Length: 391
Ligand SMILES: *[C@@H]1O[C@H](CO)[C@@H](O)[C@H](O)[C@H]1NC(C)=O
Image (tube, rainbow, N blue to C red; front, side, top):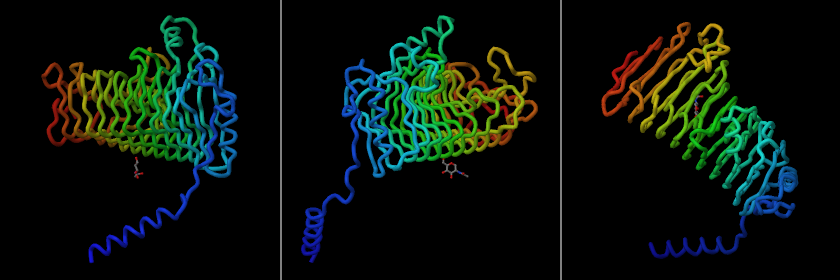
């Protein structure tokens, strides 16, 4: 009986398999090479990329833009939507190289940007922002262009970035701005530890962004979170070198809520998990934030809230942050701090932090318990917490 059954099942399966053609046709593929792109590292292939994009974006059926292996030199490229289909895959086997003369795009804000698109996946590829020249210009104190973000998605929904490597961006590597439902995974970001403003992944004005399984080493924040961010999930990210994972990048009008940062490691970073707000008036808030399962390996400030952020003491008239921080949980955070103070909660006098929870925290400095410092911070402690809490 058992034999008969499995024989039948097998027959049925093989008949089905043999007789049915693939149910879904492969999406039409447009290779940038058919539009004149050259994998020689020098020929400017911008026009070819944009022509291929026009076909992909104008297709009413699912379509894919294909970049073969080799090095493609690309100037500023805006992949503009809306498109006629919402199943676009950009498959990159090769490397996209920004112009070596940084001044040619340095004032453009963006190198590669997707705007107003829905349902776009970028898969694989290496982006080489060739930022080193601009970094040295900035370090020399000369007047230099601001620099460009290597890859941005703006005003877009249902986006996936998978398996991309980004190196040596002029400014930020990857920016998600005004988007909904985005997943960034298996990404590798690298830039020198002294490269200025080379944030790994910056999220702003976006809802439902997930960042998974990625490795980020830069000269600035590994992940930075700007105003208008809600429902952000960050999991399994290795950060270092870099400034850590920061909520509160550069702006005073902070509104950030429901952020989970889970299973992260920080190696030799300036900070671990940081929330910072400008010491300026604001009606912003940051709430419902969970930092869970973090390992610190010689991070300078493993746990930090800094509401007195005022670089160069400029433009902070009352030296008082109006951003309300509440319901921030630190759970299972352990490892070593590179400075004595492992936990620093420095909140606003006007709006003290509330609902701070420390649970199972163990941070050492030179193999001794680290120290904690709290100003205007209230909350609760549970489990083993070292340094002993100052809440
Ligand atoms: C918080 O964000 C997560 C995704 O990061 C989402 O699944 C969850 O529904 C959000 N919670 C609320 C209350 O919006």
